[in-house]
Image (cartoon, rainbow, N blue to C red; front, side, top):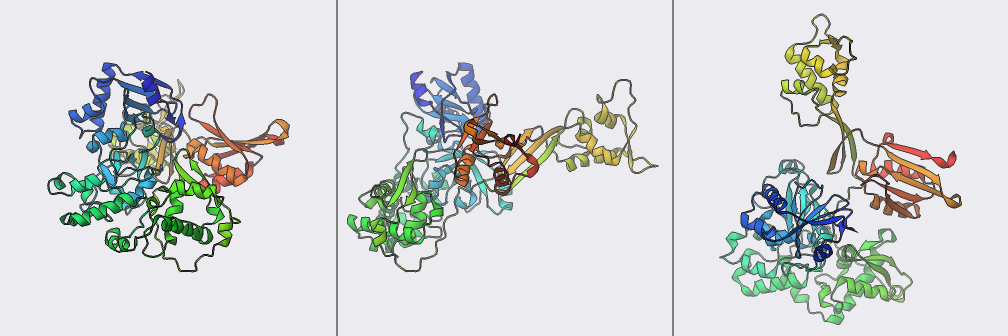
Length: 610
């Protein structure tokens, strides 16, 4: 099992982003393999037997890795992870990118507007509708909660797997705005990286971006193959190679060269790169030394004119697309690959070594982060920024739309129990649905109207027939006591709710979770530690869809103090944030103002005053 242990030696505290030790790894028995195959067939109905053989070989050993965060990963022993699920129940299966590279049609796929959007997806962001290219015939119908893949136009290999956050009908009503996919797994995350023999499927896959596969572009646009690849030949409005270009091999080769050589330059939305390519090629006669010099000039111009201290830390991709590129001279294509540094990360590291900036690599995202600027550096002080009007830049709306400040909604909802089942069935109400208090009351009043139970002599009261009386009181009346024969209308709804199962629904942006029972409160408690120092403990964040690690990092900057996170003893999956100092009141205010948590759900305890 050594090979399997090395293959699946990590788990992810936030899906597949942060490594944690694997809990257990075991081989599946023959019966379990058959059961997995049946479940996969139900989950992926478009898959043929041959498709399933490719990802779950009948004669191969399949291993199951279990993790503390309840994720399960099924892998071909000695090869690649193929299937995973996130809830440990084993039914909501998702293919890995390795499985999709073997069987690309296993899932339906959204196609991005261009390869530049892939930077965000493989950086761990969710997919927003503005980043998706809409086919001429419109989207295929889909429901919320379905597995979908993500592709780049002109590349048949999917780059990510996610779950839809709304149906196609809801998406159209929302004007195709908001979150389309909650991304669960993507190329270059820890699941992809866990395979010893990890690989990329074609030449369009790079470290920080995925673009068209040059080989696929050539074949897919030929008459013989165009019919078989409709999904990738029409969905990119900004594609650098149009189907009409195949008539001229020279034009086709030139466009393909631009795609493969210029991937580090983010395109701007509405930038018709196909039309501008010939003009830019005329100006692109810079030597390596000239490109190096231009890079340095653009960086200094950006440091002077557009990068503020409050913007730091800043990802290298953001620095490049939002600040460096807008500072280039008009008509010049700035290609980092044609510089002596070859890569953006190496260039930024060289500037960091020279002392102009401070930068380091994010070990999880594999991206260089700009941390600080040395405005006393000789190069900075000697530079004279150009006073020119910058062309307005319509930046592509980031698919990494943060859910931190999204409007929080908390609602108590109810599910019909066996007590009230006859009432709901009598009016043909859905027994599997969750009801608000108003909706549940409406159901019982529909029953009263149907059975004509309003008391003729007192319209404010309802007569209890056997069915309604049992639903409201059976098992709740003390033995020997008489059952009531009528009930006041104002008490009817609340009495019914007491006989239903209480749940709560928490919604933040497009995220939504339903849990059984009443919602727990957030606990904020300040206590004294050794040396009379104060420590504030914060727990219960999971109930309000707040990530403890992200909040700890945010509070560290806000209060300029040390913070840590720790799992609560005996409470699996529940964490607390420890904040140095007595910031109890400021913390409560921050949760209300920034995260939208209602005050009634925050409990504050100051043990230092006792």
